[in-house]
Length: 116
Length: 152
Image 1: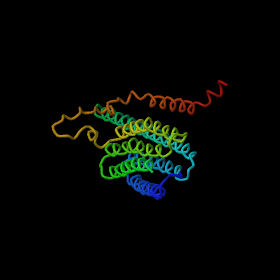
Image 2 (image 1 turned 60 degrees about the horizontal axis):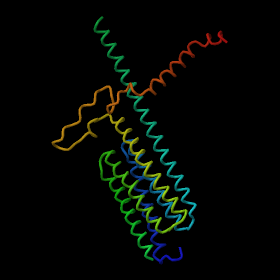
Image 3 (image 1 turned 90 degrees about the horizontal axis):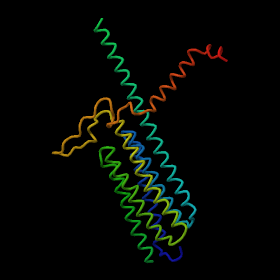
């Protein structure tokens, strides 16, 4: 940290500020997102930006153990995205199957009415 | 000093890629297109930014940790994007052809038959049958509780 020029600290703080603004913008996308995939994607992006921020802060404060937190954050963000995608995919497939079964039942009933 | 300039150059490139990622998320119209922009930031942006940090840290344990972060992200991000795209393709009910192609002159993809989603027939998803079997078993148990009591 000692051999760095005097611009270094403002540069890192500026990086953190830009990342914070980007996180706010992505949060707007999370709220606006018309589809569920939009929201999950935005959550993933927020995780990436926060990880970058943690890495910058770890260098700024000269505390390299924050990088472990960075790694754990990456793992948890990945698991969240995987689980949300899986759960919603299963839900949509189940809805689709229910609808198909209902339509088939209606068709059968209509056919029986026509026969009688 | 020279080391800081190199690292700052890498970090500025990473930052530009992050900004492009967010702009792309707002300017593109459809989820799968937006996902392209997001995946760019997840892989390329984090690579450049972390390379800058590695240059700053020098040869140390912290650099190894940052390399681990890059490696983990390069493996995890495509998997997450794949599952997310699968969710989008499965749940797209209004216009299944939207993700096929919209370039003029190119033939459209063949129509997806009504019984399948993205070419995978619904019957192939065995978890649905498992859930159904569980429900049926529960119903049977609820309908005939006396028989179980007699059996015991």
